[in-house]
Each structure stands twice: as C-alpha cells, then as structure tokens.
Image 1 (cartoon, rainbow, N blue to C red):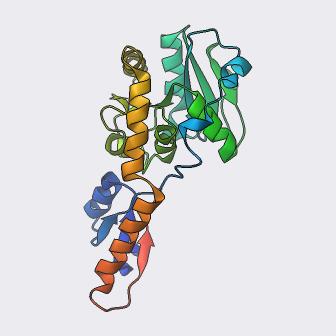
Image 2 (cartoon, rainbow, N blue to C red):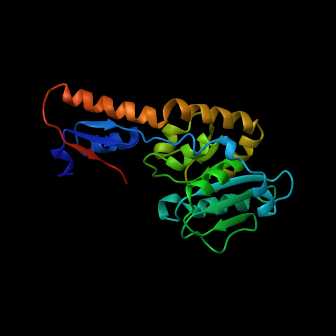
Image 3 (cartoon, helix red, strand yellow):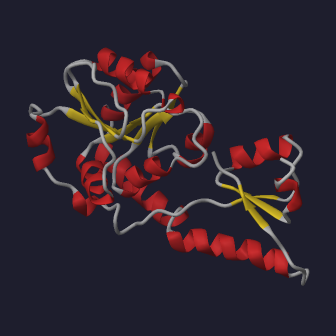
Amino acid sequence: MTLYRRFDSVLAPCQAMADRLRDWGLDHVRVQPLGVDLQRFHPRWCDPALRQELGLARGTRLLVFIGRNSSEKNIDILLATMRRLGRGYHLLLMGPGMPHQVPENVTTVNRCCGSHEVARVLASSDAMLHAGTRETFGLIAQEAMASGIPVVGARAGALEENVPLGAGILCRPLDPDAMADACQSLFRNDVAVSGRYARRYVERHFSWENAMHILLQHYRELLAGDRQVGFGLQHQ
C-alpha cells in the first residue's frame, strides 16, 4: 500500500476491488474496466464439429470453463456440480493444471490454449460455468458473453458486477447444489436469447473502444490540474 499511496491515481478493474482498496486506506481510486476483442470473440466462430469431437449425444448441454487450475477458480466446485447434473450435461475444462480424475461428463484439455482455439470453443458451447469467487474483472466470462453464450457463475467478485440479469444466472458461491440448480434454470429458458443479450451487453460496456475512452477520461481529469501525474494499476 505504501507504493500505491505515492500515485495520483490508482486504477482497479471493478468496483468491488476499488471499494476494497478504499477500505485499506487508499484515496484516488478509479474503476478502469478491461476491454474484450469483439472480433476475436464472436458467435460466428461457432463450429458444430466440436460436439462430434467430444462424442456428445444429441441434445447434450455443453458447458465450458477456460482458465488455470488455481485455488481461487474452485475447479472442485465445477466437478461437484457436474456430478449433480449427470447425463445430459457435459463440461469441457481447458487450461494448465486441470485434474486427471474427473466425472464421466467432464473432458479436460490440460494445457495453455491459443486465442483462436478458445474463441472456437466458447462460441461452440451452450454456456460458461464459472465458480471463481475472487475475480477482479472476469475476462474469460466477458469473452464467453462476447461469443454469444450466457454465464452460470458465483455471485461474488467482479462476476456479480459484470454478468447482468438476462446474460446468465449467478448463484450462491461454493455451493454445487446451487450451481446445478442455476444450470437447470438457465436451460429451462431460451439460452440462445440469453446469449444474444450477453453479446450486446459486452458490445455496449466492454469493447476496447469503451475501455480506452474511460482511460483517457481518467487522464483528462488528472491533467486538468496541469500537474505531473503518476498512475498505479492494481490487480490480483
């Protein structure tokens, strides 16, 4: 905190993190969202062949999570959720360090994945499943929404701010039963409609153009005082 107190402005990627920094005694904290590549992450990259590659039966709901297997991602909650959902749902877990022992309705890709592969998988899935409780922005959730799929996630951290009603369902954190119920509720409605709304939401709020506009506004407000300024960027 000593370092950050030396800056004229500290940027946080979500309101929850900004509030936490203020609680820790930092002044001059501003919210600076990240941006999403709306061309790379787009519904047009949907590829029906993905389901064939996974050997999924017709009508199976395909869920996806992409990220590292670290404690704050709560991969164990995702696996427990899939055990409760059972047949008819399948989860594709992609990222380094994914577990080897998983339920029968889970497939893992245990490596770092390139953006083209990630974009194809997101656009070809039905929904994202995200149990993280300490997201400072939740970029993968926004990339999923930009790809035209809704998010089922934990009602915590940046997901609570950045996954609006209509673009998915948020549930009680660290509760596989609640997450399974949320998945079932999502698919009782029109998932395609939720996906289209999710895409429009990201277009309005998290384009790179919007992110840069907000960043430039931060600079304008500081430079209005005609003084030399320093910036700090806070993230986890």
